[in-house]
Image (cartoon, rainbow, N blue to C red; front, side, top):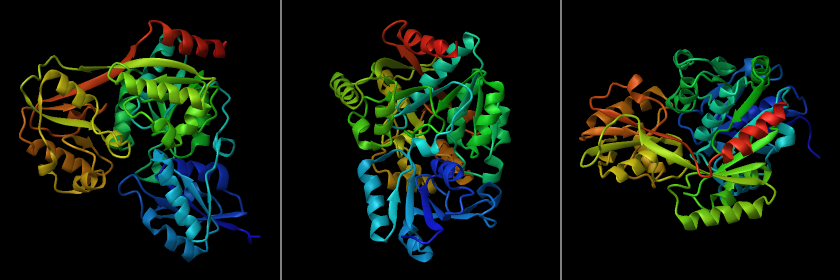
Length: 443
C-alpha cells in the first residue's frame, strides 16, 4: 500500500507529457506530480510548467528536469511512479527507461487511449504514422484540400510543439502566415503549419487540448487530428489513418507507439512506394497485415519536385533536410538528397563548418552524413543554421524543409526548395477509400 498522494514523475519531450498531465493528473488529489523530465528536443528542460496551467494543486508550478537526472529525482522526492509520455523511440529504448525507474524503486507506467483521448462533438479523422518523416503531413494536406474543395468546413488540430513560453502556448490558432510570427514559431513548427496555411486551412495547436478542442468545434464541421512523431491521437478518432514508411522496413514492429498505431488503424497507407525498394515494400506490407488484418491498406507515392525551374546537374549543392526526420527519425537522407542525386548534383559536406549547437546534433546522431538538418528550436540554433549555410562553399542550397527558410534567414546564395506531394498509385483510390468514407461519416 502506498500513502496518498502517490508521487509521480512524467517523462516527456514537451507534448504528450503535458497532455497526459492535463487530462489525467490535474486537480486529482490522490496524485502529486513532483516533476517532468525532458529529452529529445534541445533546451526544453530547466524550466517550470507554470501554475496557470498546472492548476490549484500546484501554486508554484511543476519543475522540468533533464531526463538524465531521473534516478536522483526519484530518490529526492520519494517517487512511487514514473509515467513514460513521449514518442518515436524503439521498444528497447522504452524498456531501458523502465529499467532505470524500476532499479530506482519506482513503478513504470504508460497511459493508454482510454485515459488520455478526448471525445469531440464533431467527427474526427486522425492521421498518424509509424515514424516521424513517414509522409503523414503531405497526406494530411491532400485530405484537407480535397475536403475543403467539396465544401467541408475542416479545422486541423496539430500535435503540440510547446518549446517556448508555455503560458503563451496554451491555445494557438493559425489563420495566416503572420500568425507564425505572432506565436514566435520555431522552424519545426513552421515546417508543419506553413503548407496548410498556404492552402487556406485553419490550424489549432497548444498545450490545453480540452480548450483547443472546444474552440475548434465552434468553427469546424470536421476535425483533422494531425499527429506528431509517431504518437497516438490526443482526440478519439472516428477514422484512424496511419502512414507507414517503406524506407525504414521493420520499424512498424520496433517503435513506440508506432506499432500501437498500426494495430489500431482503420486505414494503413504505405507511402513513398515510388522511391522504395520492392523488397522493402513487401516486408512492410506483410508486417502490417500480421499486426492488423482488418485495416484497409492503401499505397501512395510522394512526388518530389523542385519548386523553381532550375537544373542542378554539375552544381555543388548544400542539402538541407527536415530536422526531426534526420535526428530522432533516424533517416540518413530525405527528399532533397534524392532530388540532388537524381539531377546529378555534387553534395557538399557541411560538417566542417559547424561550430556551435549543431555540432552536438551531429555528435548525438552519428548516422547524419553530408546533409544539414534544419534544426531551429532556439535563436542560437537558427543563427548557426544561417551561418553554416553562408559558410559552405557551394553554388546553391537545396532545401526540403517545408518552411521557406529564405523568409527569415539571410542567405548569401541561391536557395531552391524541394516539395513533396501525394501521388496516387491507383487512380481514384484515395478519393474512394478516404474522401468518400469521410463524406459518408458526415452525412
